[in-house]
Length: 340
Length: 229
Image 1 (cartoon, chains in turn orange, blue):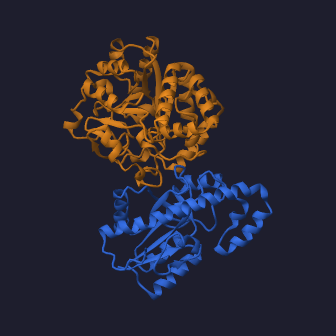
Image 2 (cartoon, rainbow over the protein chains, first blue to last red; image 1 turned 45 degrees about the vertical axis):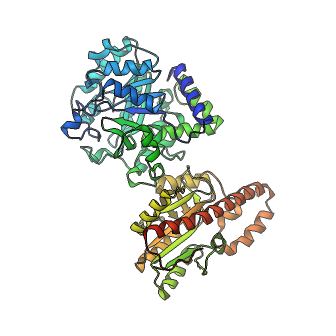
């Protein structure tokens, strides 16, 4: 199964509750960044270019739990920076799981084996391990050799200990269809990971290598080619079927950045996980004071080449709920994996 | 400062009550010519183009208000409205609690007829809405260095196909042949009825939005000759 039944049921009931309370904007996934420091400097990353005093600031476990409660999203994605650098990451995860959140910890896996004995497998917890390609491509994208092997070893060990392990692949201009096919087959057939999250890279102005980013038209062509491969039918994507169609240019969607609010060490980042127009001190202020209609494809130049899942998965959920056929497809895909 | 109000058709102009007759531009290249001719005779401080449009942005519904951020046309450069005036209007509308989006417009020589065409245009141009006049009007204003802004309200949604007779629509005069064509295709009457209701919703939204746009401008700019309302 792509995601546990309990998670699918809990999220569905959460969304129904939001709809019944006529909440126009509600969070689905809290993007929690308890620190911005990282042990890598990836070619397409625009998260880590901060002064030393910010990189040295870590959210406390209490601040992380408060953020999760304040926001109310049923899922929490712990990102960063590299979350496994945080000295209390185990406590943060434990506290979020205790609060009934479905937590995924996004990591490059360099420090994973060090933490595995301190974390507990649970149907409320999974790892999402960053893999942008097979060995050569991945190590080139993260600008350090040996990281792919470390990540693969971490995945095997985590799976052996009973953890749910997903992977997160950012597709860049240099990611060829053949390389992606090889990677996803390896994940599905050899490593037997639980699910794949796939998203095109966002053209961060501060990223070290600007050549890795694609224009929107290139993204659509690339995903069309990749997802038309016969092999793609057995890749277990965590991404919703509608989001995958959006990536191929088959459905139109507008960004719903409010679906994935981002809490960083500096506050609630406005307006989304990728763009930075300052920080709101509270979640309430983020939701009420942000001019949401100003952002999105066609509305802001910075959104022109953004098809990232953190902006469009919530849109896919919204759109799925409006169509019974899409709802059934999404249900089947989330429970049985593969592409229906 | 004098504002020249321009509408593509008299039907759209009839949505608001103006003290002085506005400029009716017509569609396509004619719109640009009409504006050029008027600007040859007078030099307003601002040209305000208002009218209806079709949605490409899937989040827009009939009656949604689009304040133009940019306008493009196939194979043409992007044109931008007067930045300061647009910002003033945008802030004013937000302060007044008006609902609107600030997006790009696409001008085509014919209506965007089907959901598939609209999807392709959305992917290619990233425009929130499609019309048949804004680019030509903007180009005419740019040629004479007259600032312009544009406001559109949405009639048809991004997934909606237009009835066949309306797909060839070019000018207000084409309505007659469209009516005859519609009478010969009763299976399309539900689509016409739906579009008719959406048209009234959009027209009502335009009637509500336009005074709000002018009020917003009034709060931040000195408008000496206010022709609206």
